[in-house]
Image 1: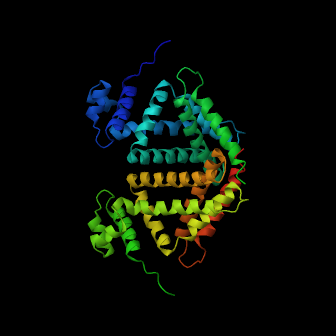
Image 2: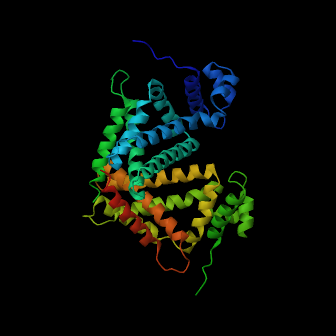
Image 3: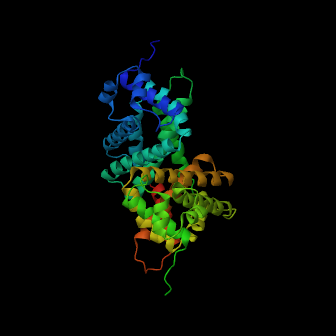
Length: 192
Length: 192
């Protein structure tokens, strides 16, 4: 089986997250990240404008993919069906790099209030992107907001299970995410 | 009608939020906050351990009140009924100080990524506190999570409408929050 070989951008992200974990976000420099990834500082700056963007870039991609999936969902999709389409689109783009990153990023976040705050804002950004995309599709405001929150929860829960799992089980992220969404949908039906 | 007179603690919170707004969170010192509030630095430190706690203390109180309300909800309450009890308990404690604070805090948050991150983590903390309290009451994990998210959304939406409203209309925060929860509950029923 071919081993996955990260490119420069992927190595930079992994190096950054490991350094945030070992030291602190504040105490980590671009020079250290580039050094750990085995690239030059100018290679770093071809991929990211600063160390903050290493964390933010992934979120912007995720938000864009989720919004695209919602925009392209079939005309008769329910609000949660549109969310599922957004999640499928985003999850479909996640590969071995993201799976490798998951546990390391979780560890870095657990150790740092600053990264917890960033991560929390990231979830808010994803929910906002999905809410906007749903409203554009004609979904009522409150419904869009609730559907988007369930979507973010499903993505986070599915991602965590996927990243925790055995490396050799073949299930893709999308199946974990859609299973989580289905569970949350049932839960929403038993709120009373 | 007696005008509401803030005490030292309330003045410190209002002064801090205004200063975070005018300058930046990072650029604001404890000395400036105490000075603006018309108290000494030692009075500041009788109320808060540092400037960060000015923002955090309110959240801890909110989380505690929500959890207490859920713990004390009637034995036959539905998950969302327990959330409503938690919201009622927390909203019932919010007075003129909180109403005055709302728009200023929103302005400070809108102007600062750092405060947005803190505020996002605050929402995560409230949701976690409600989720834990619901699970303790025997609510299934996924249901607890969804109910708690709706509770946080309802509190934020209700608070925003209350703080935006005319100063003289007498409706208490709790009525705005429960109305928002009811709207979100209907929305959860039309997700598809």
